Length: 362
Image (cartoon, rainbow, N blue to C red):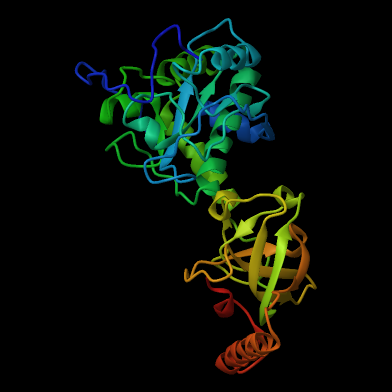
């Protein structure tokens, strides 16, 4: 972490006067770094989650789990390692910290991205997920680091339902360099990772690397994450009145806004949307049985919620599925009647017991 350059706090309101302008080379120019990543078939590293409990948990300006973009940093320390940086940040988090670190072989997430970090000052801290890149010292390592950083940026955008949008030109978007934040929002005078990209690109590839080139890679990875590789399957939907608890293995799977594979608009959602806790009870109002044999449940956070928002989970996310208990025979009868009516209504609307995407709407 570049704390030796500046100390930024969550409430820092440094003057934006004199901020350096951020320029890039021709955005349409072919990138030798990107071409090398493609030709060498470089695969991004997997994310290592090593969340430290000592970091403060403050909500973004729109709430927990609601960042508005991603800020790309660079440590400006040529002699440090990713583990040195992480250790240093833990000791000095009251001054500044970010969510993750990236180098040529690792992506290490150490702070919960559902909460803000202190890496760009006010007002950016309350808006963005932030990660640092550690300086690397070879052609291969730099290419791998760019692949890791671009993929991780795309991953975060996808995770929080944000679309790629380069903020460099107008200060509005989802992909930011520290320099773009400083130029358009203030809070610091840093321009990273522009200088590091230009220097390493020139040294190892004979061409300056730019944020425009980096953004091209982000878009490529994001698109790959959202390509539909399989045809939609049919599913049978049944209205129910059940409950279940969240399984300890829930993180192996994902939360969706529609039934995955049976609705073209199905998209991953952040687990924070349902305040996940192993053993917590969730209420099921619909079962989706796919033609492939998989069973999915549509859940709501509380028994009597009036919210129309529902989320779909794979059956293995839940355990102990059972009917919602009733206090008397009459209430049980009324509940059963209500469920039967809802199921009949659903079937009547489709004219069949098998539907595709329409019945899986929130």
